[in-house]
Amino acid sequence: MKRKSPKVEQKKRFYDTFFKEQAVALAEEIGVKKAKEKLGITSEQSLGNWVRKKNKKNATESGDESAALREEVKKLKKELDKEKKITAILRDATIFFCQDQQK
Image 1 (tube, rainbow, N blue to C red):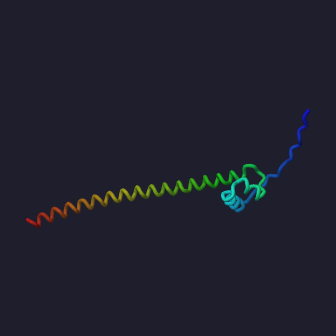
Image 2: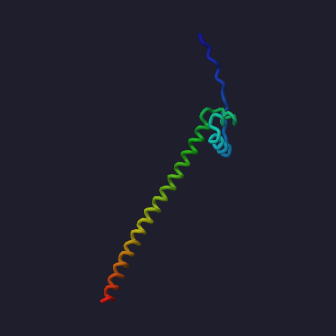
């Protein structure tokens, strides 16, 4: 009969945001496994989760920025079309009045 080894309770550690930011920066530099070992993070998934969370946050921020840029491009295209119409009307008027002068 196999004996079950007693479970060793690990105290859950909480890390402050500054430590997490620095750990993520280190993980991006040297890799998650090495950074975890170097910093003494015992949880298997903590550092990886922090890195994924940061990447997701950056993706949504850049998505918001690109949405704003798309809106601005749309607005500028509309304005350009309006200016092209005005230019065409003025060009036609100039031609009309120049022909009238030549007669």
